[in-house]
Structures are given as C-alpha cells and as structure tokens.
Image (tube, rainbow, N blue to C red; front, side):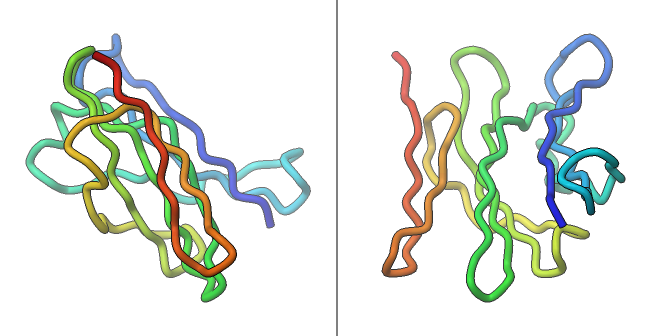
Length: 121
C-alpha cells in the first residue's frame, strides 16, 4: 500500500483554503482512493493554510507528517501530526518551531527524528 500526500486547495486560496489530503493506492499510484485529510480542529483552522507534507513511517507503524502552516507570506511555522491507524485519522502532536517554512522529516538510524526547515527573513 502506498500513501500519497496531496495539497488540496479550495476556493481562491484565502487562508484556510488549503489542507493535506491522504490517498491510498494498492498499485503504486495507478488507482487512488481518498483515505483522510489532515485537518486539525483547532480554532485557527479556518485562518491557516497547511501544505507541503513530509511523512515518515516509524517502526511501530505510526506515521508522522510535518506540515507547513501559513497565514501569509510573513507568518509560517511547521507542525507535526501523527496517525496510529495507517493514515485513516490524524492528530496534532506538536508545533516544531515558531517560525519556518516547509519542513523535511527524516528518521535517523538511532530512531530519533530530524526536522529541517527553512527560515526566510
């Protein structure tokens, strides 16, 4: 099973119109079914776009995904979400940093997670 993380845009791109949808594919992407959406229920959801997913599968089958959260060109930060049921549901884990652009998450050989992100001034 392959999971595809896709940024979905609704409306005209106003804050809150973009989120990450997760699609499942049993045949390496030829056929896809929408599995879930990573959409938090926090009060800021309707004001914040979330995109640029960077997922990692952990040895215990948990999936973590870093998302870039952005209100406007000057206000962006990375958040980490997790799924314990193969991507069917997602929950907020932590805000990785107060500032930063798209994030890449990598699992190191010793099991720790390394998150790298850009910070533009």
